[in-house]
Length: 151
Image (cartoon, one colour):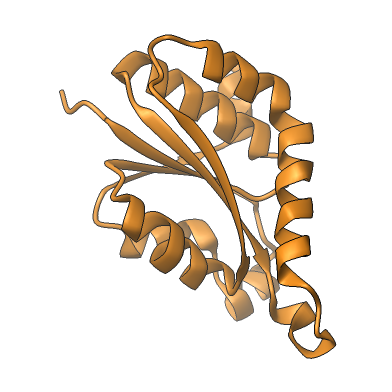
């Protein structure tokens, strides 16, 4: 069986975020893998407003650390997980995830959550998970929060 050494987990602030963190930590523990958690703040709504993207991403990181900080602390205390990092960027979500966070990190596994967009929204903007499945050169795991309830 393949062993994962570098795991990238995409966080989106939605209901699936905690499930993604839990799954990433579990797989990292089992494989002795390092984890990079990444979140991209969609810049499109802010592009015409002259927003301070540095402050926006710092605020985003603080919100993630507050939302899943207990889980991250548990993971950082786990001797089987060599490192955990959290990075937040602003930009067009799929492009920023792939080009700025995932590709330079060179993970063996990418984990993301399912959001369940409506059919109309999916037709116009697509799905981040579908884009990752199609464009990543490694395994991609799409987590459903209810799958953790079954364990």
